[in-house]
Length: 83
Image (cartoon, rainbow, N blue to C red; front, side):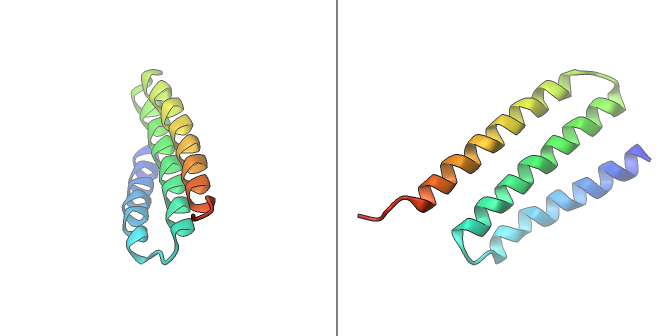
């Protein structure tokens, strides 16, 4: 069951990587980046369960923080007034 979840999540990551090519606006691309960070976090959690090793959870925490910060920074960059 764990392998099936990993395969499905891996396919979701691949589909999400193709989505920015179709996204029309910059906001859509930022949302895709946020979704990708959550999917990578899910892969880290599944890896931790599979190997029974807590190290991927630390990497997952780092990915979650960087994903959140990148979403905030990119959304402010999009919202910034043009001079």
